[in-house]
Image 1: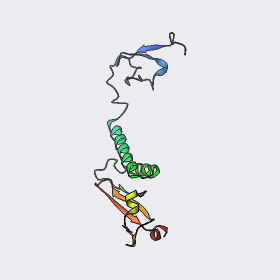
Image 2: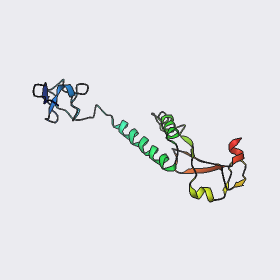
Image 3: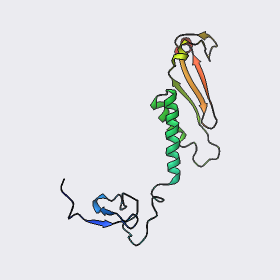
Image 4: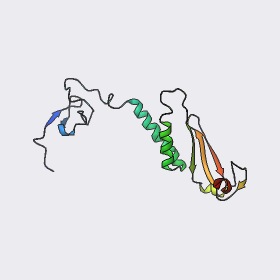
Length: 153
């Protein structure tokens, strides 16, 4: 790659680093986010680029995804739950529509243990389906099992 000796560059007033004009992101320094169009002003960082609430939502979605991934839920189910709950917390003090119900695979312990169907009350050992139900506004999950008859109906 050829050196950029003759490329146009400037010094960022925020981080005091040499920045090439072709590397600017929307007129801002790619290192610190300082606006280079008004070079008299001193930069204070990313406060106006990334809102702090966006970061908390990003962390919330990450840990929610990790929780359901560890339980064995499919990524499509988890992402649809996250997108559905995105509007549930917007501006309200009491969130609504935060209940979830996800299909998860049975673990080895679940496969060999005697289970009771949550629909018909029948005891079964093999087959069936495991569902995790709960509410994001409350702690804890409920595990429900369905036998083959109720699962196919």
